[in-house]
Length: 422
Figure 1 (tube, helix red, strand yellow):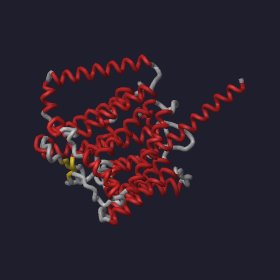
Figure 2: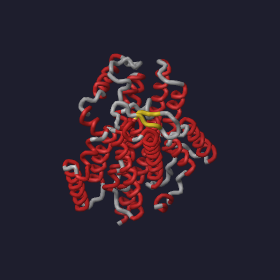
Figure 3: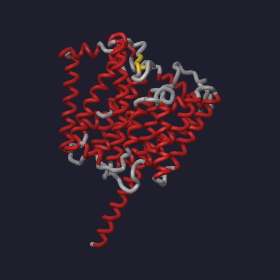
Figure 4: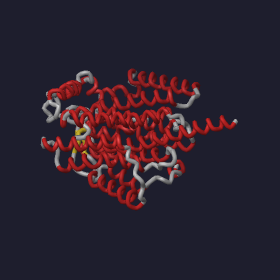
């Protein structure tokens, strides 16, 4: 296990510790500024590294931050604290992600290592929040209240809506794909066991918290990783067929166990907060749909934002629409272009044959889970740390995709030259 992690010498362990603390929410703005300061001092001044900028994507992200902050300040929507972090952290985190991977080789260990640091630290924040809330209030009073689901965060007496806490579980929920379909390697078995543990804890947490969002993230991540495995995984069709049959049988048996109430599973599940919210409130009647419609139409009536669109909620519950609802069409377009650019890098990795299938499955889970969460929740106002982590991962993905394309071209050129020699 440790040989698999540490064989790549480019891993910066001090940066890893800082990222770990940042995701745990320990003075996030101060920790984020320390990360930026460390990057500038160590990489730029001491190592004199020639920075990779990716001018196109970085420019759109930076312009988005500038325009969003400027317009939000004009409307008095954000404090100076929020303005500083939105202006500084996303662009720098993208830049750091770009530059922490070596620019002379393609190895999966660096991106694998940092991705796991982020998944584990975010999971621990969510787990400690649920554990602290359970300890303080008990199970029934806190989690079975479908109208007011609040959770205490670990390092203070501040409480957050359960929906905000789910964001910290979203990447660990996406691990279901790599657990089922990950390539079998001796060095990877320990990771699969570890992934299974934190995945099961995350599933239990979303059931306790009654999160429909968490359930959707889990299902979409599973389907997406399954598709990637089928089309871009190992070529052995018989192995794929066996796994598909096993998964179908597992789903049928689980459905039977719930319907037959084996070991009381049916009563426990259908008496939980999640089932109450699913069946009594219902996904089809979610006010988010009207909020999306109102905020989207509002871009035509109020192109400069101002939160004047007619929506039934305080937020549009969508990263991109919330940006438009708050600050108008200019930052709305900029954040969409940035998002599409990051997706392009991810798709390049998926289609590159020389990249290990485990990395493809891991990144698929991460991207799908984050985009799913961004699609249904207010992010800049409620889960800003997740957005900055997304920027960091996007930077790594961009660099990794560039290296993979370059390596593929070299391989093709080498094969072509050998053919000519013969």
